[in-house]
Length: 164
Image 1 (tube, rainbow, N blue to C red):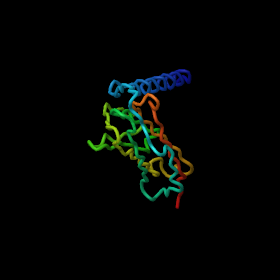
Image 2 (image 1 turned 180 degrees about the horizontal axis):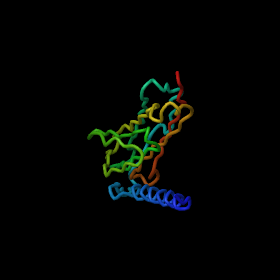
Image 3 (image 1 turned 30 degrees about the vertical axis):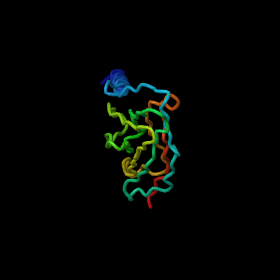
Image 4 (image 1 turned 90 degrees about the horizontal axis):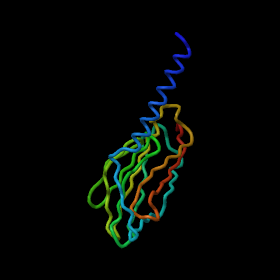
C-alpha cells in the first residue's frame, strides 16, 4: 500500500475527529445565561489538594459550596470537566443537575435565590487511566454563572495518584 495514501487517510481522520470535538463543544444544548448586575457568585475556595490518592482506594471526591451573595437570582450552568476521569454535578435546594464529564453538554440550569447555597461535587477516579496513570494529576471544573464579574469560574483540584 502506498505510504502517502495512509498518511493522508490518518490526517483526514484526525481533522474530522478534531472538527467533531469543536462542534460538540458548541452544542445547541448548552444553556444560555443572561448576565445580571445584581447577582453575586461566592465561594470560599476554588482550589483543593487531595494529597496522596491510592490507585486501588476507589474514587475520591470534594464538595465546593457556592453561594448567591447578590440581590437577585444567580444562575449556574454549562459545567465542564477537564478529563473523562472526573465528574461534577451541582445540587441546589430544588434538586441536583446531571452528573457531567468532559465533552458532555447539558441545558440544565441551577438557580440560587439571594442567600441560598449549592454544592458542586467533584468525583475523581484514580483507576480510570489504568495502571500507568500514577503520578501528579490536576483537574479543572468550570461553571458558567449569571454574575457578570464571575461569568466563568474555574475550580482546580490536584493530587498525586500512588500505588499504595
